[in-house]
Every structure is written in structure tokens, then in C-alpha cells.
Length: 443
Image 1 (cartoon, one colour):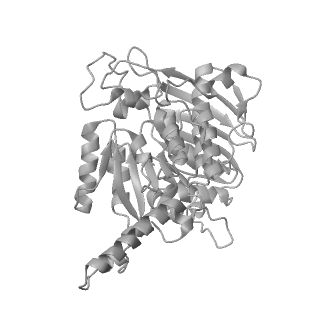
Image 2 (cartoon, rainbow, N blue to C red):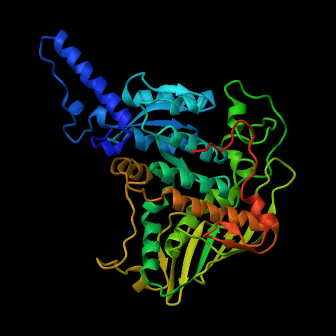
Image 3 (cartoon, rainbow, N blue to C red):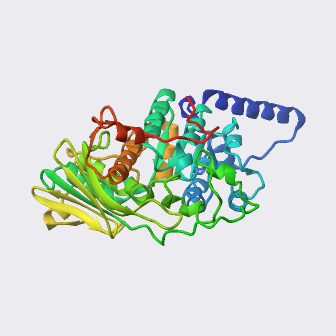
């Protein structure tokens, strides 16, 4: 863990360093011969001394957890992965093996119960890569346990996001909403061009999200595999028969666990939209949409959709399915791209090649990505590039789109009070019931 006391929980830092000092003193008494200590242990040659590294526990070690989130932590000089957790024993052991092979030891702690990770006093931060219905509960319990948190997007409900924001701010923890978009040059470039007036007054944003892959999903009940703790996988969600199409990647297409393609992809492109629109701490004031749902199988999230969001500043944002893209249209031109991470395009070469000068607005980013940004902020105690407040607002846009389709009418939203104006039925959908004992903890 970093040297400064501000970089971690003071009790944890004191305990760990007291132990190291006591161990060193004991060694000095019992060993008369000089001991050669590798320079890397002392922190030389650009290395961080082990005692100063940020210790991290991984909760959720599925494909995204191990293929996207784990490698940057393993390869980061300021981090040390010390624990992994997953309800699927096969995935758990795979992650444990990856960690141990990287460090060339057998030290990685592995468990199927995330509470055992949170209970460890030697862990400074957690990386949460679980399905959406677990995001907020585990994050809140991690904050309660004194950990900083990096957590995959999105929240499951608007109310959950409000509770999470309050907890992070109350306890002064570092929270990174986990997406790479703000570190990607294409989306950062678009947002800076728009915010600096290069397309004139912003009038319209066109967001295109992909269609959900696959069909309606086979709902035929199956025996629970022995390697899976299925009840822990379900957690706060309603009890339901096991089928392999319900768990792991496919949870995204079931409303009990996620918000479908609008939440899965909207959390990416809506963030760039809000960033460019300078509404990242606010949101739309009016939403209407139409859509169809998957039927005749397991999946029940939105299939086709056409949603329109209107903002108080007059900007109108539309969202339809197709090739994932975004386009900002202003009074003097447009900027955008067609395809995920595709090159930036513009209505003129002048806009495309425009320089952001020293006196222009520079939007904060970290080209090294979300994981490095989080670790640097754990040390500095500053907000990362996608902090909890902004992550909540983006998730809110996703949920508002889904609710407008569900209710089939125009909704008026108050982004300050965070509730629907004059619509009790809609306000009842700001949260949903949870299965005991997994209620939102008071943090």
C-alpha cells in the first residue's frame, strides 16, 4: 500500500507495518549474518515495495472478470491481488491459478462467499465483476468494511444508485464505475470537441446500441451443477429454477438480474453523450419510447426499441438499435463515429482536425485505463474518471429508457429530486423488492 496515510485505511496500514517492523526486529536478533534484500523489495528500479502495494480482492471471476479486469491488476506495479471469489468453483479455481502462476506462489485466497473477502483486514480495495443484481449490495458492504471499490456497471435500479452515491460520499471512499470509455481516445475526443463548441450549439445526439444477440432463451429447468452455488448466485433476486441460460453471460437478458441491452451498452454510449452534453451530473427531463420484448422463452428484456430523451438545455437524444454508434449534431456541424471504437468522423475537416488549446476545456481522462485510474486515485484520494455520481446518472438514463418503454407513455423526470413528476405508478418502479436476507445495508 502507498506510503501516505491518506492512501488507505489507517488501522490497516498501522497493523501491517507494525507486523513488518516486529518481524524485522526479530530477524535482527536471531540472525547475526548480514541479509541480502533484493532491490525490488525495497522499491528500487521502478518497483513498488510489497508493503506499499494496494492489496485487492476480486469478487466475480467470470470471463470479464478474468479476461478484462484481472490482467491489469496483476501487471500493475502498485497492486497485489490477494484474494478471489466466485460462486462457480470452476471459475474460482481458474482465477486462483492465474493469480498464483503470475506471482509464482500458492498464496491466493479463494472463496465462494464474498463476505470472506470483505472480512479480511489486509485487503484495501475490491474489484467487483458480478452480475448487475449484486453490484450495489456488494459495493455497499465493501464500503461498510472500509474498502475502496471498483465495480462493473450498471446499478439494477435508480434507487440503488442514489443509496450507493450517498454511502461513497459519506465514508469518503474511492469508487470507480468500471468502463473503459473515458480512456478511449475516440470518445474523449468527441466529448472535448463538443464541449469546446467546435460543432456550435449542440442540438441533437443520436445513439445507436446493438441488438441483443441470440434468441428468446431455453427456460427448461435443469439440475444445478455441483460446482455452482446457485442460491448465492441468485442472492437478492427471486427464486427461480436453474437453467444454464439463466446464469453467467446470459443474465443480461433477464429483468430480474439486469436491464438488457439498453443497460449493457447504454452505460457506455450514454456516458459519452452525457459527457459531451455537460449533463453528467444531471439527466434528461422527459423520456418517451416504444419497443418489443423477447417472448416465448427465458429472456424478457427489450428486443427492439426507439427511445427519445429531452434535456432542459433543449438537446434531444435518440436511441435505436443497429451498429453501436454515436453522433453529436450542432448548429455548425457534427462529430461522431459508426462502430464501437471506430475512428472519429466529422462534417468538416476543420472540426475533425481542430486543436484543443491550452485555454480550452480539457476533460479529465487517463489513457492507461480504468484500472490504473482507480489505483492512482486510491493513492491520491481523488475521484476517478468515472466516479459513483456520474456512473449513477448514466445508469439512470438507461433505467429511464427501459421504464418509458415499459409504461408506454411520456415520462417527466426531475433530475434534481430524482423522481417522476406527478406519476405515482412510475415512481413505484424506481426500486424493486429483494429476497431476504439480501436487503440494501444501511451504510
